[in-house]
Image (cartoon, rainbow, N blue to C red; front, side, top):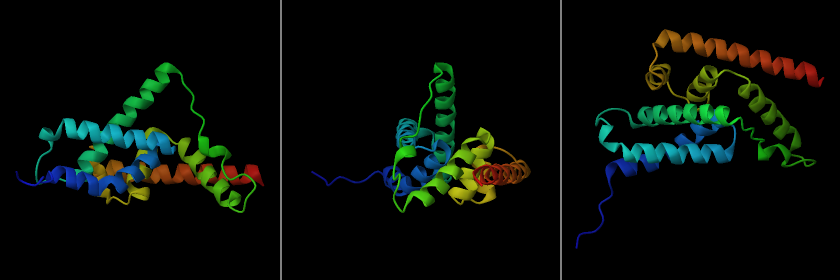
Length: 169
């Protein structure tokens, strides 16, 4: 009996898990949704592993799968008219961590107000650190579209954060 030889795709997917989870958190805002999205992405990837072209970037393929899975989930939620309140909203109330937590919540809120296109491009480029070319490939859009979308997303995010700061003051 021969020892178990790990499937190279499985090994590469396991190595990508931290990046996949970070990307999922950047577009879902909630830890539980992010974990679910990573699981759905992995299930879809493993089920369609024959479609992966050797020699291409596995991370780009996975990001695209997850982006499409999240779009499906958002559409499904809209159809069901369900509202999800983040569990994290009540954590750490009254401790020293509260101010930093409030800042993170303000950023999450501002990001949540962005359009899906802007939120996804922010997640890929600013959160996960993909190069513009790689992010454009993941989104299947021209590089110029990506850069203009990112510029508009940054501008919108900055405006939302400034507006929130004025409201709090």
